[in-house]
Image (cartoon, rainbow, N blue to C red; front, side):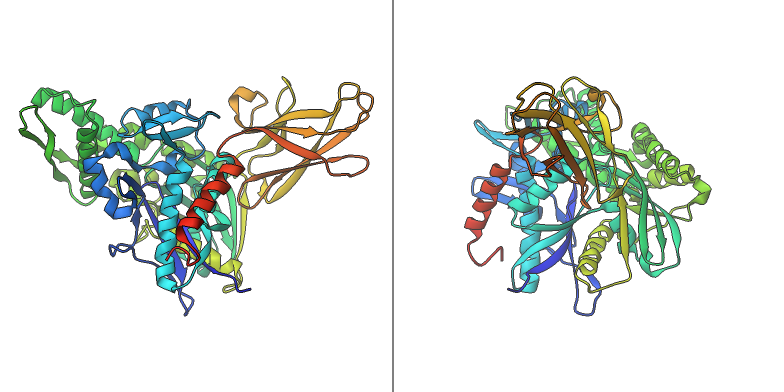
Length: 528
């Protein structure tokens, strides 16, 4: 049976892209139906069904509460996270708590969806673009993710892909993909610092390239620092300005806030090239009389930079932490690569230059280079190109605990992956037939300081005196940075049944159900 086509996908917070390898071996970004090289990561749940991409912008104007942007930021995130609470205050759509504590989205009374479902719509649209290009099914992809994603976010990305009918060949960290897409494998051996500031996250990776070997030495980042945060900050200032200059309090008007956000984003983009612009909303709101109220004000680059100063200062800690983890100083870094649309902002470039002590390398299309890197990784995995080896590391440590005991480190932060370690648990009571343990992500022996990934139970143990049954639990962190567990009886080596008592993210059965829905809707012909 022939293997289907494979593609490289950059699933972004604000925009996404898909790339392929042409017949001549060169990577190529595929254009969207609107002729662009990136697809807005936007889904409008319209009365006629979900609409994705550029066409979904209409929903921002008419029904912003049903138009989801920035869903990537919600993947694998707990609803009680302080940043999620802050984020929710200015979103036009409603965030709700899922039964397991994850963040979900409320579309209307009684209808709630997981961020995985929204991201699956975006991935499905990218799949359709690729199938239109090839004229045949596409069901495999390398998908890029922030290097600083935790295990729950990585699994949520794979779940979104499965729902979209895509088998993930590999989850590739965005900084590594950027270095690959930049062509670092074709140049001289270099010590790189990759700074990736997009719509939702800031990633930093120290990457050495030597003889075609890409070795990630350290990854750090800020999961809540990106262009969306700058937009939100500008909107907060504009809301106060509207109240001061117009006497209007529109803090509860979702449509007006969304129109301000879109205008703020447009002005931010313009101020990357200009020192001043005019921020304008033709129709901000309607008075009860039916009269339309507009809003306009000038905005200077230095004014925007002043508002965003505290956010821009947050660029420094991840860079210094990445350097510390690999025992380097800024002088040791030979080249700095800038990735992500927010690196176009002059103040961002200045701050990275200040922290690193040298000017960064400006990539012509920072929004596309990550997808190009993903396509090159597809080619590498399929043997189309050779001489390249990727060595990645764990972004965080993995720990286990039993009962109320402290967490015990199993896999250390920055360990080379894939890797496998084990721990041995003994029964504590006579005839004990079940052992429960928790898996955490982090570095602290205190569970409250770590991320809880799940509770598991080894069941149907043989009846025996306390301490006679020894259970070997193997913890595997694969090349995607996702966690797999297995259990066996230490002495006999017999495999034991492992049950999941609690888990973050969607249940396996729910992912399979949603994937079947998509497959049934597409029919035997695939997404094209």
